[in-house]
Length: 431
Image (cartoon, rainbow, N blue to C red; front, side, top):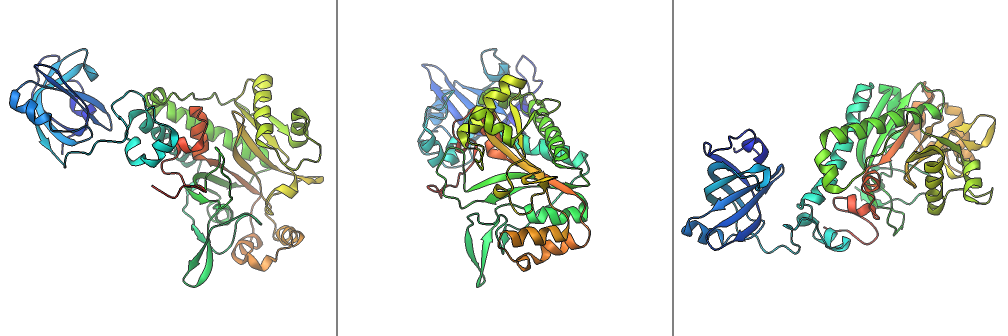
């Protein structure tokens, strides 16, 4: 099997070298009076084919852009060609039927198509180098997340996505028929990852989550990738925030190291993760944005204002808001010692938008029973979860990063769908 373009052409002599074989898509074809140039593309880049023989030029003229071919020929130096070399008078073999005319011009340096067109034809538009770079950054983010947590003693887990109850009381869920029983698509691995802290102590998961909330905004999806982590033997939520800080630093380092070309192609700007993420209490955050003292949550405009304030005060793209009201947090959230109105939880704002929710969880069985009953729920609805809490669970906490939201903020994109392979929302169920 031929190697990639980059591997095949690496280190080739500036003079005509031994024959090479490459495979890829016809990215661009230019016909001049005596020569036809064909730019071939694969996952690693481009190479130029120079076709001069009349019969070969006639054959190439029938091959449309995006047609998949194999080319075999000698390599010659050309500083103007991609990579500084080109393949001269190759033999070209068709590997699939000639491609139909694409709905967008993928050979152009930039895509001018609007977001709906990009999404409607995602199977093709993701082929464009600038679009492909977006998901390369996402993939590097996941790799950095995994690599760091592996090194910190975490165990990767995979929890069910079909569950018998909602994770967060009152939140909208997607129901389904599970062999005659009502089941739901999981909103989060939260309950399972907490139970598994009692098994592995430190766990993480990368996987889809589903939210049936009817949000039709630029920041919400009905399905997205969540980077979850949970770990035991903590003192409070500040330990969780510290672990989150180190995770984000490792992710940015891995992206910079592994995908510098993708960063440039996508126009993404990596943040500097501070040694310590600045923190403001929810009460103070309300004062900063001029919101009423009894406001139960932060609105998007509040988050944007706090992002600007954090940048001015600390020179940081990150700002953690801690101490959210207990009434707005799930039942498993640990209260703030001495004042049960607030919680040992936080939201991490990144460039003016909520990126991460995290905090300390309850860990004593009796506290869970009391918390559920206070919210009008029966503890009997959570048998396995409460069983774990009744057999010795250490103080623990965790966080969850929304992958697509993270990448969209790196890109400065106005819509999270720009960083989503195949978005699912209130209006889109295909492709």
